[in-house]
Length: 201
Image 1 (tube, rainbow, N blue to C red):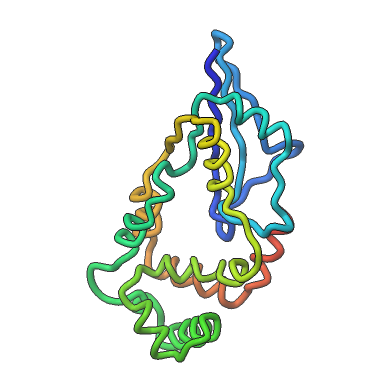
Image 2 (cartoon, one colour):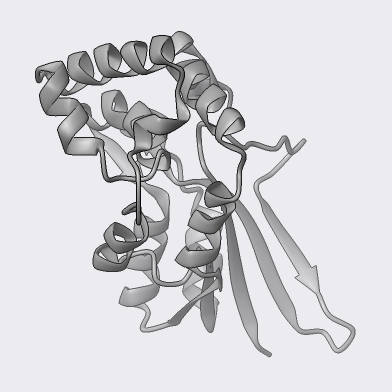
């Protein structure tokens, strides 16, 4: 009997879903084959991280681990996909918004405004959203997919993905500038939302 474990993750600050009793679901096929669906978040503080023993036991029996993104460890590709072909990431903001973003980023990164602007100018605006996890990463945290991959590697299981990195980043590439700008500004105006969502999830 073939057993598979599919992991669906969500970007912690922008997407979430509620489930009544569990994060681990068994899916049975017509011929008795089984698979499992497990809901995760990409990154979570150590204090909130929890892998139940049932999950570890289920994962140890799986033939394959299917993550949201199969090549999540390819940092070189990620960097390439986050570089703008023209313009700067600050072009999507009004002058007032840009000033707020520069002040926020400079304070967060402990650098001068002009240094922050120069450092991020050629990156896609999506990278500014990623900065909102900077605070979390200053304290102990877990990357859930990495933990799952570690279990799969120990068990010598196949690891694949449902989507590509190109597809996921492309979703943000196709958002209207005004929508992307407002998402970033909302994160800057209400940083407490991220903390509250961590605890709730």
